[in-house]
Image (cartoon, rainbow, N blue to C red; front, side, top):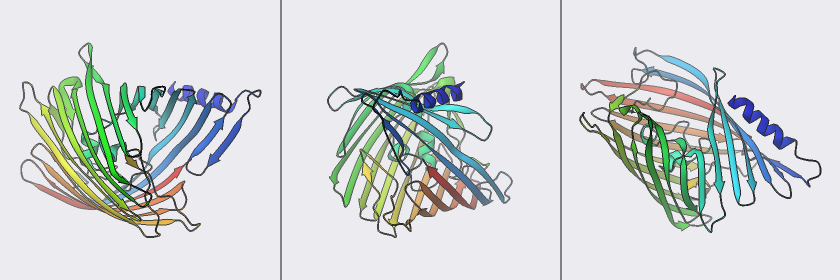
Amino acid sequence: MKLKLLAVAIAAVISTPAFAETEAKSKAGGGMSIKTDEVNIKVGGRLMYDIDMWDGDAFSDTDTSGSDSELRRARIYVSGEFGEWEAKVQGDFDDEGDTGLSDAFIQYNGWDNLELVLGKHKEPFGLEENTSSKDITAIERTMVTNALAPGKNYGASLGSYNNDYTWMVGLYDQGEEGNNIATGVTGRMTFAPVNTDNQTFHLGFGFRQSRLAGNEYGADQRVEIHTADYKVGGDINGESISAYNLEFAYAAGPFHAQAEYFDAEVDGGNFADTDIEGYYAQFGYVLTGEARPYSKGKFKRVSPKGKDGAWEVFGRFSNYEPGTEEAEAFTLGLNYYASKAVRVGLNYVNGDITEAAGNTRDGDAIAVRFQYVF
């Protein structure tokens, strides 16, 4: 049903009334824009195909070598601007033929420097999380980001965005708690005291407080290889979670760096409280001289200047501590941006895990991504 609704929406966009003066534009990696006297419609999407290979018990239950491939993301969206109103619907497709809505919201822009968003959208928590999956430097986000960032949920948020500072706060539906909604409050604020064409210095702070649907919080995470079959952490019994994070980023010409620290506590209610914390630090350099763009509190992907594309190298260290366990991952990566639309990524990941009982796990993995944005 969701797939049919999305198809109907796209068909409606393409069949714009003939009597309206219509202007259509498209660009690599930027979708197609259809503009009339009254509305501006965009259609676009992304396709990410991954191949993973690993060796060691940080990635495998049985301490054996393994490999897998998957269609990591296949998305298509349609968005529209109608005067002071804006709306977006985005559908996800997977290998099993299932579909789902990743975004479905209405946005009001009629107030000065304010945006009101209603529906399913990304909660404002974390720099890495709020950077689009098509724009992040590594193939996968870090363990601690995946564990603590709430992602996309139904709710209402209010915020303001410009290139020097942003803020957003919202109330969200976290699932069912008995016959009621398990509600959560999430907010994020960013500030760029230096933001020029050649240099950016970014600071940010985020918080979240939410009830837990089913009195359980899922803290299990793979060590930054998505098809690996071993996870660190697990389900934590509790009634609510409180978390905050700190963001730092700096970019100067082809060099860029960012880091985040996260700290959370699951209120156990009748059980013991559980702490979850972690951090990561990432550094990158574009060998062909391009800069990584920054806009409204987050970074965009590299856009090559020449016909031969752009090359980028990076390194990242991440730490994740769910309760009494600890996991670390060291990633080295190489990205080739053939164009604004096409990107090929290669990541080497070394993982180490210390389990609650003191047992250790380690391993090495290679991940390759082929990405096309349209």
